[in-house]
Length: 127
Image 1 (cartoon, one colour):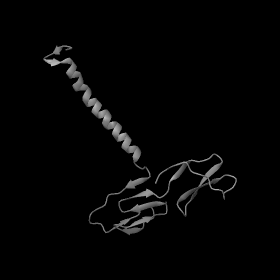
Image 2 (spheres, helix red, strand yellow):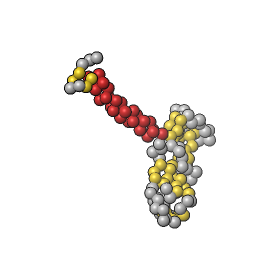
Image 3 (cartoon, one colour):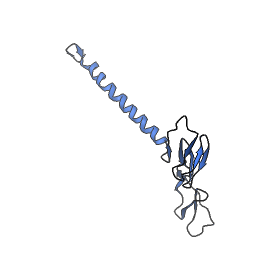
Image 4 (cartoon, helix red, strand yellow):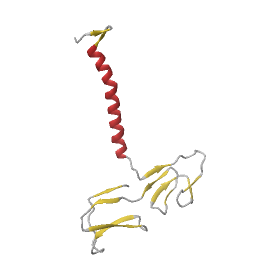
């Protein structure tokens, strides 16, 4: 036994003070891990239970609750929110370039000196 202070065991009082700190550190680690799984290319919107239609914030078009659409900024939307409709290539060969096709809402990765030759994509973010 390490000793008594006002009837409390010093060893057990140290454990009592450390345990809450460990709990909060574990909680912070869990929150950080969950945030990395979320997509920063999405956003949500509140839906009123009495709504029958909602307005797209980009195109200012109206849509029925329960429907989905793609707006002019390549976002797949519903009345509950929107998410990016494409992924962004991040890792591909150095002799290639990424070009965004706004009509197809996708990136095309091709050789810098020959746009007819497509390149492999090793990693992308989004969607």
